[in-house]
Length: 386
Ligand SMILES: Nc1ncnc2c1ncn2[C@@H]1O[C@H](COP(=O)(O)OP(=O)(O)OP(=O)(O)O)[C@@H](O)[C@H]1O
Ligand SMILES: [Mg+2]
Image: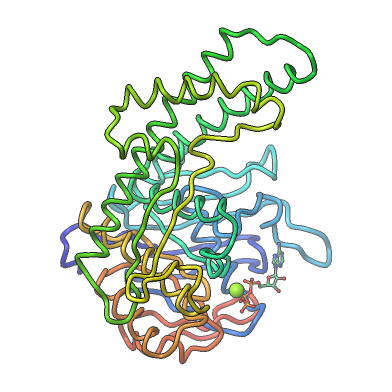
């Protein structure tokens, strides 16, 4: 089916139990895109959220385990589960996400029945998603943009999440010591130095992965100019990224950042947080054709630019690995005019990606015609499919 050789990552069967407004669901699918339509409150976003929980991270809603437990008038269900048969880089596997029976707030993820790490999931079942939250990406808070970009990086660099959480852990630990310093205690300087060395090592890995992803992404954007989507010019704004991009070796940049952290102890202690580092980086984007910052575009132009980035990242992964990741596009067509909606369908079909798209009206997905599976969702069930 795939012209690119590798099997197309896709969900071929999806079973839900006690998940949000789904008491149960058992859905057989093929590798084509899945277009979900239906009225507000039907369960479209819930369904794509369930799919997103099969990949690394906390899903499209970043919700804890308890929030997804199905609420009923008799009280919430006790357990939830998402089971899938999926085509992945490791061949056909079963993926499962569900509550830990010992602690409903915790999520367990399994590949073929064995506990799966985030890195393993990212490696075998890469996934990219956009939600209505990203409609405000360019004009919104820096932290949201960085989180979005890090998700793009993760889709091509499976260890990125592990590096980020190790960095955060060392940063939190260092801050605990610095907070005590603010209270007059004298923290062990060797312990602080060790934590800063750990932060520096992880910071270099994070920044290098971001720069690498950015270069691939920009190359993909430049290689495939689209008549329907704006062209993004991307840049990373971060002190460690700038150091590496400026020609420092990884070792030099690591030593420099460890030194920077050391000299910032007093300031970070007073501020109650680390004021510099890769957790403070930002993604800058310009709309090339209009020669203006992305944030100055119209609502639809801004959305088109975010979509263009996600599609380009999917293209970069396809060039690199032979198959595009699963794409989740909640409210895919919101703010897009008919030309852009056609362009979106064309781009997804060219990528040969199993994209999960939601929208209130089936007509939004007409450009896919028979190249997608069309499902109408009503009240937590599939009411119709074609
Ligand atoms: N834990 C839960 N248990 C039961 N129902 C829930 C739970 N969480 C959310 N819901 C309900 O599920 C319904 C469907 O939500 P969902 O966000 O999937 O709708 P949607 O089809 O995407 O609608 P829209 O077009 O408005 O985006 C909502 O009515 C919501 O209140
Ligand atoms: Mg929705």
